[in-house]
Length: 203
Image 1: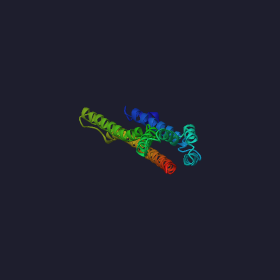
Image 2 (image 1 turned 45 degrees about the vertical axis):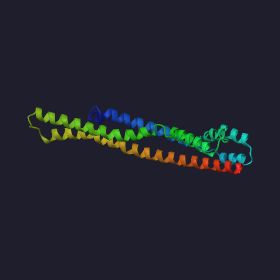
Image 3 (image 1 turned 180 degrees about the horizontal axis):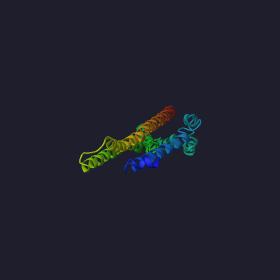
Image 4 (image 1 turned 90 degrees about the vertical axis):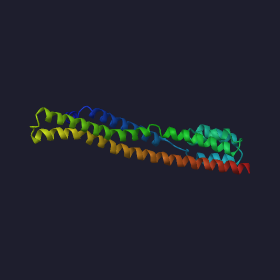
């Protein structure tokens, strides 16, 4: 296998590096998401119950100790709960954006790898074809089909590798983006429930 890959030229190494890097990013995010609990078990129900009963201190302690993304957002919201709804919503939006950026860390790199890998493969193919035509020129155009075919398939090898890396990488990227979108929807639902509980308490 190593000997086969070596025939693809110098660009096989960066393509393989892209595959390893993409796999590492995907597995890291996958493990991170598997361990992530956006709102905690029954966390939102307990917090809104405290808020409706005017038990703000208990609600704050619950959010602070939850260790969840929603808990961190609501901690910041409760710190400004007396400054008006507009301020609360601004703080919530900013805190939510920060959590989403944390969840999306390195995911964009997968899209970059998915775009770069086939281009590296194409570049390898072009370099391989240039070498093949240089051989043809050196031999004065008197080459048999086997010599030409051998050079061409070696040149095409990098394109095949580039596509083989790019396709699963783009699928992985789309999957992770969909997971982030799901998490973002849960955060938005949680913050809306918090604002409703705060509004009911104020009224």
